[in-house]
Image 1: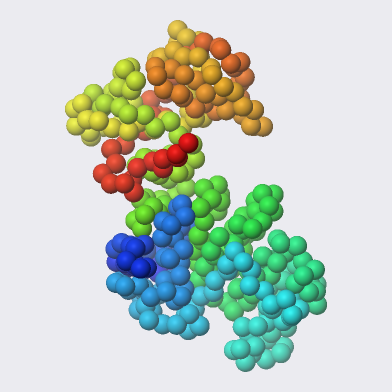
Image 2: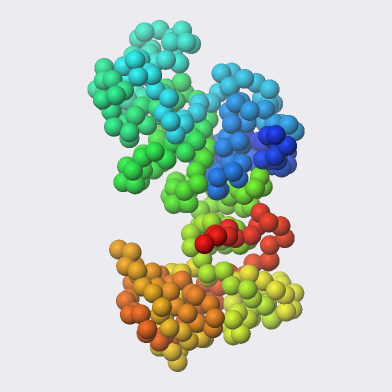
Amino acid sequence: MGKEFIHLSHISKSFDNDLILDDLDLVIKENEFMTLLGPSGCGKTTTLRILGGFETPDKGQVFFDGTDITMLPPNERKLNTVFQKYALFTHMTIAENIAFGLKISKKSKAYIDDKIKYALKLVNLDGFENRTVDSLSGGQQQRIAIARAIVNEPKLLLLDEPLGALDLKLRQDMQYELIRLKEELGITFVYVTHDQEEALTMSDKIVVMNQGYIQQIGSPEDIYNEPINAFVADFIGESNIIDGIMIKDELVEILGVKIPCVDTGFHLNQPVDVVIRPEDVELVDPSAGFMEGDVVSIIFKGVHYEIEVHANGYDWLVHTTKMFPVGTHVGIHVIPFNIQIMNKPESNDEKAVEINE
């Protein structure tokens, strides 16, 4: 990945005495697709707005390619923003919408016409110049909003949940479109979402946030396979998060059973959180598992079955392509490599999200 491009240095921000960001420090590399991921209220949109110049931090600085732009207004920053609400002008044609920023910059008509054609081709909407906004579908309107954002050749594109209003199939199609655009344009993308699948699909790097703090930064693979705490494990995909005791290196006790793992470096008999992904749980013959249990529910999900197994007082979540009827007595087996050991949370923002039923 490229050189350091953006640096949000020790950013803090409050609204009405409510601390939204607390000493956030984040570096974004050139040509990187970085996603800010977290639940509502975690601070991700505030981070994006500070980067875009729509909010000013209470403390800290924003550096853009080595230059301090903390107090620079949005229109003077070499970036553009795409919002969930497309903010297209309904009284203008598609061409006029795309050309809006170029006309403000007093570009020539020939230059503007070339740029409109180029932008429409990039978003696969050739020939839409004279269409009206109202004649377009939601997905087409979002593509026009993106075309308008990229036509000014920004060095940085900020995207604030831009696919949130689209249906599932269209959202998935647009994810691949954005990946393609990023590769073709060679510009830096910063993307805000609460959708874990979007983040895992599109990103070079994911920043997981909660309660104003960065929980973990890493590649999609690292974030999913090596979550740093219970919040990340629970928020990124589904997990079995079980209280455990690290007996010694490579041996952990969960639910009264000692099982091998690959983790080292913990204290003897240290309380830990044990994370096991549902797809890593194997249902085997009762005699072949490290504990036994009974299937209490099964749901067909299309590509797999989602099964709940009650074993040793815990309801295990299991994803498998094999069907096990309710009432089946099974063994539970997990290979050591797929058992993730984590330190217990030190603060509320590191805890798994609790759902009140």
